[in-house]
Length: 231
Image (spheres, helix red, strand yellow):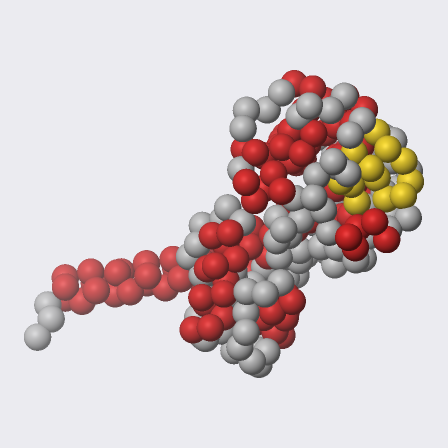
């Protein structure tokens, strides 16, 4: 039989656990729905559909987060520099090109943002794709990335565009993670402030390198340095 003192300790322990659970649930709700093995519903369908579109998921799009969805999420996370835990939290939602559930429907990236993380993320791709280009060429690459964020044909977040599978060679080969130059950081800031020397281009490539023949079907806007820009 439990003594009065032990009953009090047990009750306090139980209340503390319930309080922590309520706090965790409140935090999860504030951040948007977190998906994991066993989750069900429309949010799971969104994830399954996107992963199926990008070749990570081959199971039924049924709204149930089972073993196939779990493995596909882990593979996507590992491929895109995320913690491969199989849990769809805010960062994985963003990389998939979705705002976290419950947030604004299409936040995108507004011109004029000066947040250090956003500038750094954009500058990394500029460095990886255009390290040897002029300052104008660097700004142009940044502008293309931001134009994609605003286009309904691409993911609607900066991370979603940058980490879209096979979108940028420098992400795949690691060149985007080398030390950043001051020029790339300034180019990112200029692009974020609204400077677009490409006139709204959505694609760029170096014609001296092997590229898909499809890219040449896009309407060419201009050439800056070694890069051709097209819509």
